[in-house]
Length: 275
Image 1 (cartoon, rainbow, N blue to C red):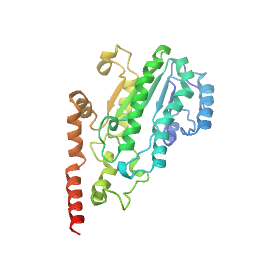
Image 2: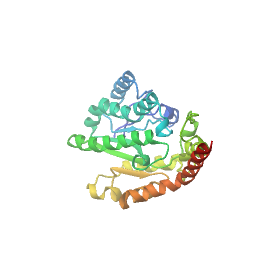
Image 3: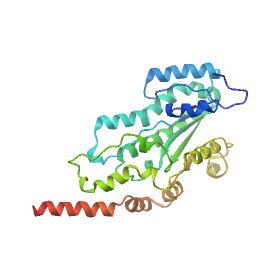
């Protein structure tokens, strides 16, 4: 592995699944399990050797999907999702903050539109991504005195390996078993709804993150944005956050077929009463 060339940005991406592609491009790659303290410590030491103790950009991209009705969750499963989606980010920031301060670097935390929308059957995932937003917003202020910046990606639907991950099924006693077909459709929604090509999203994220620093009020349009909105439906949701919660709620009610769900569940309750 070769160290960075003069003036070259050093980027650490927390996602083992992308390492083969990065290595093929000639980048130095390191194995990392973001949920394992020892793995993070070892990675920190290896990065320090490669870069002389500086880290320009930390991208926290590790994520775990979690599609299940709120009334069907298992807390052990929920804890695993938060371990990957939230706690790993906190651990990575804490571990690498010395190198980021040395470089006056940039942290990019990957959140989701689900953090500000009622992403039906995704309450746990929504909660984890909302936690990333809240954490990042405060982190930005806390690290500003050290010259470290924090950027949050409000990610819309983007082509990913989500559909390849083990999918949760409704338990037989679920309140929503009558709407199982709609639930199954929802599980792979992000891969079939105005979904952005991965390359297009990644290219825009890189380009925007490397734009010059400008006053906060102008960042969304002219410089590196603190809030990066991209992916399918991102512009609409951003607009909805400006107009009011009611617009996003109405859109999600229709998009996630809640009218159909309500009809099915009402019919089911009526049939049970007749028995």
